[in-house]
Length: 98
Image 1 (tube, one colour):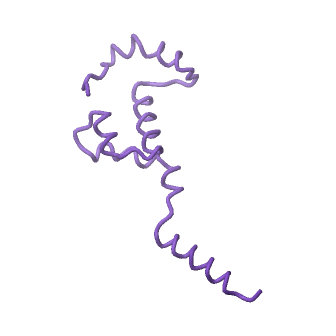
Image 2 (spheres, one colour):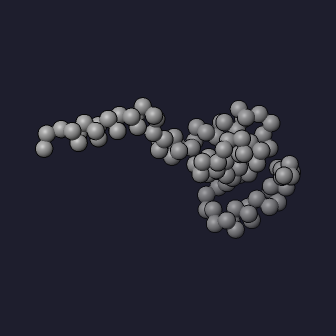
Image 3 (cartoon, helix red, strand yellow):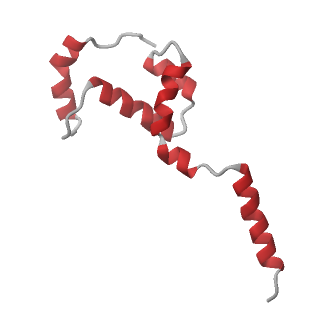
């Protein structure tokens, strides 16, 4: 995997055209695109260590910063305790009076 990353002056040359070609209408920086890329990967359940390699981060803690924005994944995760309660509620309802 190449470790090349565009420098600010390179981004200035290709960035606006890249953003326009992607159909992005809001202002976007290289950081915005990297952040969005990482967040979408997290929400698609990509292992955080894979994302770390793709972004070229030396430390996992740097990549872990993106986890706070992956709200869909966090919100849709059911804890084992909640799952047990759902099963228990279902069993109690089915054993109750008809």
